[in-house]
Length: 211
Image (cartoon, rainbow, N blue to C red; front, side, top):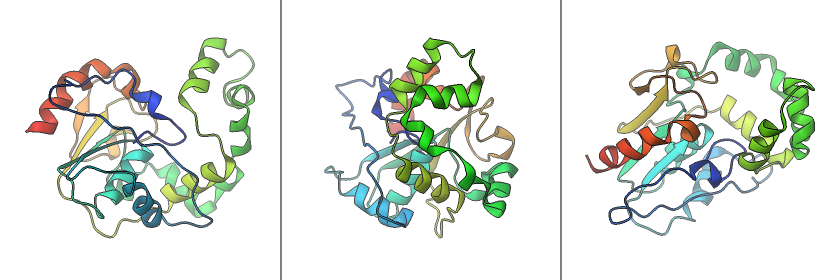
């Protein structure tokens, strides 16, 4: 399950041995008005046709697979660059929730990725970075983005799955490592390490899945 607004292309460099594993990629769909994450997770599980799957989620996708694992039987749940509970959120997330500052985010700009990148980084941004955002941020619907941001800020899981495997980078700028407990630490891993630490993933994910 990819991260917020991302598509399955973020997994393009993840190559697991085909004689041992079959990989299936889930994609975000539009939420119903005021839909809870539990309801959304239930609808997402209906896209899974195999028994006892290993669920892997990145960032917000990691939050979603934890909710899915409460609904269906899973072999393992692996989260990457994500959190296991709101206790692992950085302080700015809590401030955004209390002040509702997240409602001021110009999510409508994501429909025009070039404007969004210039808004966030200035006019000197290189074309290469714009192309990267165009490639990986495939979900640009304002309704989805508003729902996703509010959903993660208000996420309050009632039951935690005990056997979560958490992989996290020590340079993650979205969920800083100092707030994260009980994880496998990847040196130099940022929030997008699924893209640039894929060699580590390809080497270690099979062992984590099978052990």
